[in-house]
Length: 91
Image 1 (cartoon, rainbow, N blue to C red):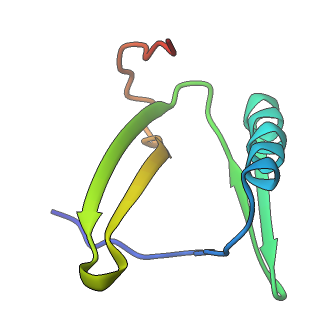
Image 2 (tube, one colour; image 1 turned 180 degrees about the vertical axis):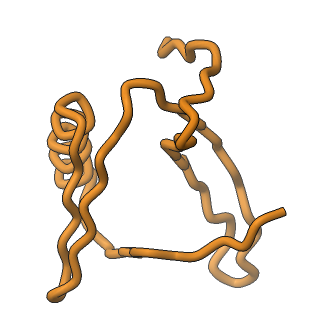
């Protein structure tokens, strides 16, 4: 297996409406083929190919006294060689 290198990370506490607005903006950028992420003087530019891999995962994790932490993770991946997978549908 290859080595994983983190190029950018952001985590912030916000509200549901702000997350929804961010995801709408992100969707538009993905559709256009380029995503630029900026935070605290850091910037990364992603040129997205036509063929992408969409991974959606839901997890529950016990956090002791805090209780159960729920997460909905949406991950978008791609290979330089353009590998393809089947579609995911929203219900």
